[in-house]
Amino acid sequence: MTDTYTAFIIDDDAAVRHSLMLMVEQEGIPVRVFDSAEAFLDEYSLYDKGCIIVDIHMPGMDGLRLQEILRNHQCTLPIIFLTGFGTIPQSVKAMKAGALDFLTKPIARTKLVASIRSAFSECEKQMRASKHNHKAKSFLSKLTEREKEVVALVVQGLPNKEIAALLDISHRTVEIHRKNIMRKSGVANLLELVQLVNESGADELLSFKRISKH
Image (cartoon, rainbow, N blue to C red):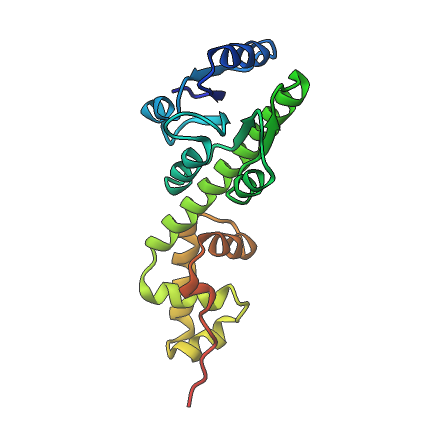
């Protein structure tokens, strides 16, 4: 849809859509409006940046169902729910599922804009985390099985001599593996390597134990 941060407004009430659009545009924020969740999904892309402002009560697909679909597709757009008669159970369900905010109509312009700007910050944070996670997983895919064993022990703080003994390989071989690991990771030091492995979520590395030789 766009490369900028955009407020995607979804409401079946034309008057509400127009009012919200004006409030957002007056703040210089790019905005797109849709009369249904289905219409939004027809144009939605994983590359979109910004936030979704959606009425929780709509004909056809309601706001909660849209939230569920987007969550299942790893959508990083924060969601702000709107309602004219919100209930506590709905609010709790929406927030537990990851909604950023839950606003009751009529909505004050200052409150709406503040919520949108907070959502944009959250979107940037999530996209940055997703980028780091992708980089980490890409790094792990480049490693050989032996290099994975070595890096698992390296990030635990073991010296080369102990790693060599545990894996039954030479000290020189460990040094070569470490050099290749650092080259493939693209990081500058051990601390950054530890962060990269942690961000990868690779349980097989994070749970790799120090083995004892018998």
